[in-house]
Length: 166
Image 1: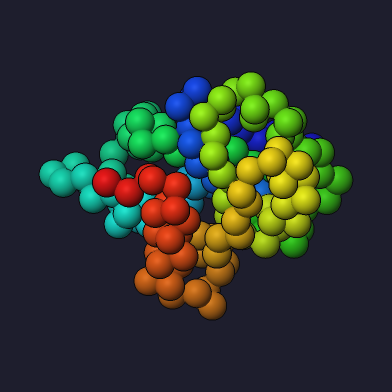
Image 2 (image 1 turned 30 degrees about the horizontal axis):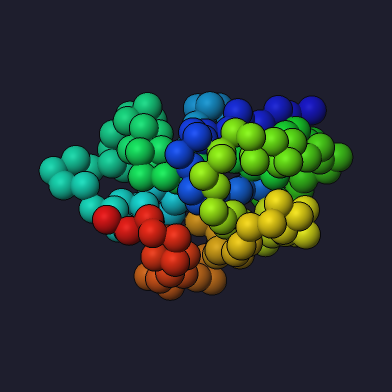
């Protein structure tokens, strides 16, 4: 049984990105979106240009503080599961995270965005929190049917709706 990562949130988190479960590279690094080909960090870099800093090349601690300072939080729908490899389709025996605790952890939370289809399968649960819920295209390298620019446009739209644009 694999265990996921703790939530990366603060009391100021306004938008929470919910993935499904960290991939092999992310679990090994103990970092959200740790695979070098995942589009998550490049999408955030494009949404929030931070010259002269290249956020994608920065340490995980700097990236984490950077996104938290902008009102963004990260977590996954699954706390644990069995899985060979990194594909969501290989997830077996998943246990959900305590998503209801988000109201206490993040009193300013205004919306939840699911990163990909497996996470969005739990939208009925997140909608019970009484917040807007979005399905974003997965940033995973396995989602090759969406070009980077198309993913970026979808992500940017949700960020704009919730005042997270610089």
